[in-house]
Image (cartoon, rainbow, N blue to C red; front, side, top):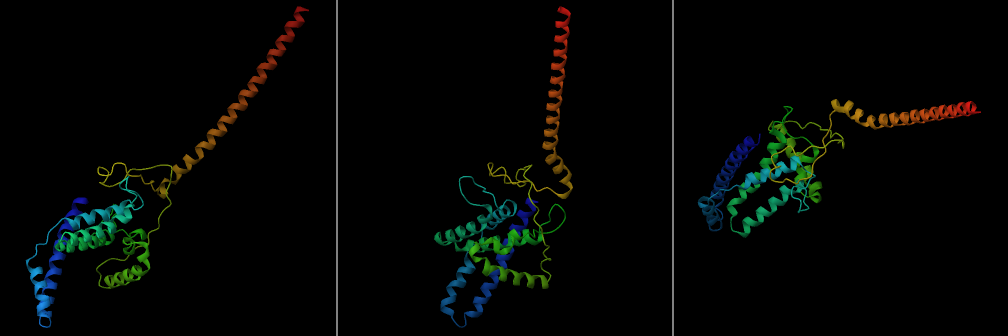
Length: 258
């Protein structure tokens, strides 16, 4: 699964970056008739710059963190939840590209951020055979700070409806989040265990088929308490009988002595 994700992210980031730069180059070529002096230098930079990097794949890994363990802390000594890691990584990467004069890395950073979400949201094949992650916690506006959600949620809905009309993406199914059970716990079901060994553990979500087992676990303490009470009552009755027998034997011995 993760090997396929690496291939998809690497190829798509390269192809989309190439298409975008070629389109921008010809757009500037047409616009140079009006502003040749201002755009000629930009066009030369686009033509002769080298575009490469691992940034798109790194953004894809952070998106997997958001999908798999959104409410956990991947690194113990940093109070940062996994659901906020993609956006923070995006901001830091963009800032470093400007500070280090590596603006050619921006296409891979931006496209890696968006393409990884689109793939995991609509095209990833899950274990039950369905495609995509249609949970509300993985919607587009959740990739950004909560203060921007009222602005981004209508925009994301319009883009999704447009993409659905052109049959680019499938319909989003309503996913009901089941209530977690706190009787059992499971380790992270991802390949990040070897990187973040001390990550908090998510509670295992029990399915409907496991309800009899849960009921059995819940009723076990009650049955054990009833059994203990019965044993105590039986011991008390046995003690009473032994005391009565001993009293009777003592009376018999006294009568014989007399």
